[in-house]
Length: 229
Image 1: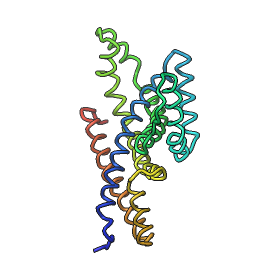
Image 2 (image 1 turned 30 degrees about the vertical axis):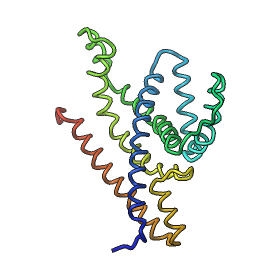
Image 3 (image 1 turned 30 degrees about the horizontal axis):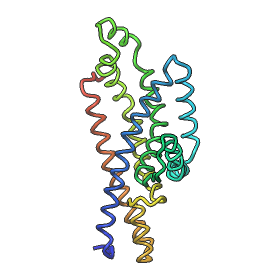
Image 4 (image 1 turned 90 degrees about the horizontal axis):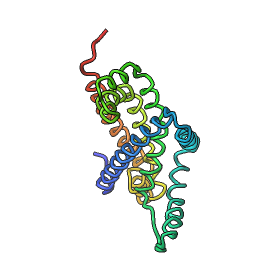
């Protein structure tokens, strides 16, 4: 039995925070990815420009810098905006909120391209058929477009989520009590770096394996009803 010097419970708490951060960032990233893909495929030029600037900037900046910029810069921006409305109290952005924002933005930038490719792969005839049946834009999107986009984009999104799950470790640098932060605290207390970093590595590996199983299940479920050639 491995002796974790009483830090086992702390590491499990860190794992829970890691999962919460990853799932919250995933939700934000999926929304941003869909909006970004729709904007890139839009006929409205300003929307295309905004989406292109967003994906270029976010994909061109290391995730660690994105976390630091949002954590230290968002407070100043929010206070400047609040001061316009007469609110002069201090506004603090916590590590979790900064992490969700940074990782969500990063995931969304890459997911934009995944969704864009999925949307472009849907035959135009299906849009025309939906219009001919009298479907409005919202119903056409949810009944015709979204199920196919989900099936096509899911493998790429699954890979992005695995990267996102590991990138959560970056947020520990601003004080989030995740797996990496708990491991660092344990190392500082016990001086057993190899032990606790190895345990942290296995915890991330376990979360990755579970995520791969879930993604595989979702892919099989999304392919139900397809004829096999």
